[in-house]
Image 1 (tube, rainbow, N blue to C red):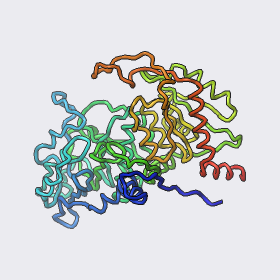
Image 2 (cartoon, one colour):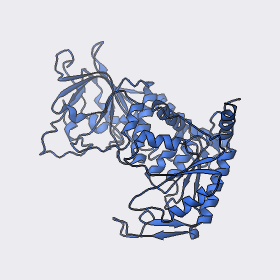
Image 3 (cartoon, rainbow, N blue to C red):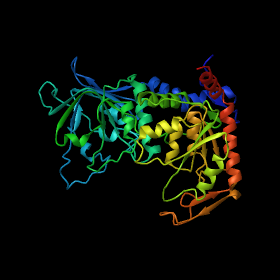
Image 4 (spheres, rainbow, N blue to C red):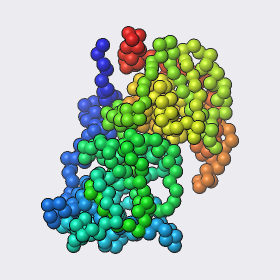
Length: 445
């Protein structure tokens, strides 16, 4: 049997002169063309070696990502509690001598790449006083700690929120494409200028990138740390970055880049696809939020309605500390229809099989967040449309706006309409060419 290849799909829109132009723009902005544009623009040599084995620093446009050799870093005193630093405080790097290398610095060129000076948009704040050292610290034995091999420095978004944290992982993956390096024999360093605890609900994911435990700057408090080879990764909230702050070309579907990221994570973490089921049933997973807001009041009624239909194999799941993240991914990847309320948990759609449908029961008037993400990943998206067939419960005021807000309440849904939308998703899954291909393959085996 011929295997079905992934393709970009789109519907022509008046904004573009042709369907081909629309697909090209999607590839440029939302697919591997995004990487190609950075690579084609090139790396700017900000500090060039003074000797054959000297230091160097090169960055892409606006210091969004950088590559360095023989980098010197003076780590601040994290035990000095009189200085309360934020995670991305750049004050320590506001004076010369804190970060540098034995190289010839082009200070004016560095300044030209300062336009995106912001915590999670570039590395300019940390590199603005990069110092051309008079002597090579590796030669003069000025290093307290030497990190051999390649290290990746990462500024991270919220580790308790899957949507935001996966901005970190996606941009790490894209950075690896920039330098063509997918080795897991690397050191990943969390760039955190604070002593605050970083809670990471998705720490299992690091095993997809590195065989070593995650390091933090405060592990080397007051030390002079020297890196043989270091990569400053693309930050998670760049201007017109990938995933976060990224406008998706309208009416397009299926980024090969996002699909390859999904496959990379699943492969490295050993997540296997076990479906479609030989019973012919479609696997339906319903995510129970168990949160303060956006719960489904009549959830039990809706679940039972689906279980009465022999076409479905239904499971209700709670993704919390009782399941490791790898276990969560195994459930998600082996779902044909994934159902949940608006919230970061829907980021799991990245790891659904290609034929799957994500059903965001209510988008809470945040219309494009997970629809865009589903279109990027290339999975079908369904959401509630007829608001006369739902009811709000337990409404409270938005803490800052002081008005009622669709994200700050619970909901109940009309059973018949809910079942109709799931049937719509079921029909899509059953008719998907990849589902039929895998189903036939399972029958042969």
